[in-house]
Length: 514
Image (tube, rainbow, N blue to C red; front, top):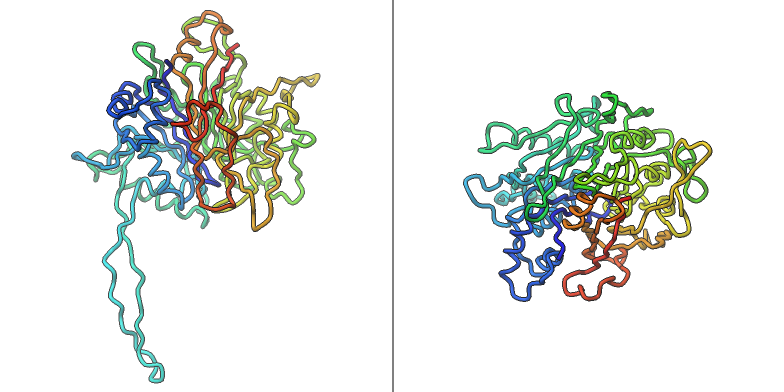
């Protein structure tokens, strides 16, 4: 029976991002689950079963990486989610109870819909004693009135992560939209100082994703079952408006007319054997023909501010991905990748904006599964866009993707097998939000898990075509708001026998590695 040590969670924070990468100790999870009656026999069902039973899973996580925390209004929900999956203790105890060694936090860039919610992880508001109303002398006709002072709060440390990764600051002043970021920096200065018993390690990611002049990797420990174990490694490929060219050992900068924080997003590739997960915050592409987008796939520059402002990160990143992660031969004991630069799962950049996820970039990544984090609140940007949904649709709109720089023009088949979205607005200010979703499924929180056994089998196959990765996807069906303005209708459960444990799913994919 298969196990799943690696978990990719796209937490539903509506219009924002919060992604959790977990390395789970399946033996410890099995011990926890075995204490309950009616426990499932299949290890893949342990996680959703534990969620149904509200089982405290703290102590089952080897290492976890939280990438962003959504906007401020969703911060408490992110904390609840982290507790629910065992990343944070529900009842901190010990000599340094707030310190969580197993948790690392990464800020992709400074925009509020990505990192404002992280304050809820680090700090909690504790109300001060209510002040007494004070008499204020007024004119004789009106007499005196009571002036009520609003209750105040003090901020106390909540959870102190073992490590924090953040992109290097730019030279200009932070805007009002980024003012909360100052609060995070103030907290990090204290958390990493000599004051706490165990300080947080803060890693500054300079342009290109470098730390102290060297490429950055984040080790989430070995995963698997028994002696069949492989490392989970997070490669930082770029940040702060730069991509690292590992082949030529140089920095490739992203140019634009004005500074755009989206261009400064941290770019990551998570590797576990032959399984890869790509996520890159809000980086942009071209959006038009230069990015391989034509017809219904192309964005119109009319009245689009981004067209003359943001940088084209994807066009420079694509060739560097192909150099950094070349296609591999079928060698026993090594990963198997069918094309250069490819990934198994893609978190679609910038919530499905039509200026991101170009056709040329998709032809490099060739993902089997695409994940989109979008919604209605706290700000609505018409995400995901129709153009991106068209580029992902493998049946009618985009059965193939044009390959960048091919002459004569060549194409590769669209590899997408499943598209999953956290939320999509139905009504906006009383009007329908027009969007053809094609086969995309709207499922709330999204959980992706490759099975350990398939990862190990592919790793040790002599010929790549003899083995396939098995990847499970399930969803929570939990909306962020109790309102009809949010669409949470999902397609029927694809595995009805699992209905007792899963709100949606699991969908099971066989991913060829040839």
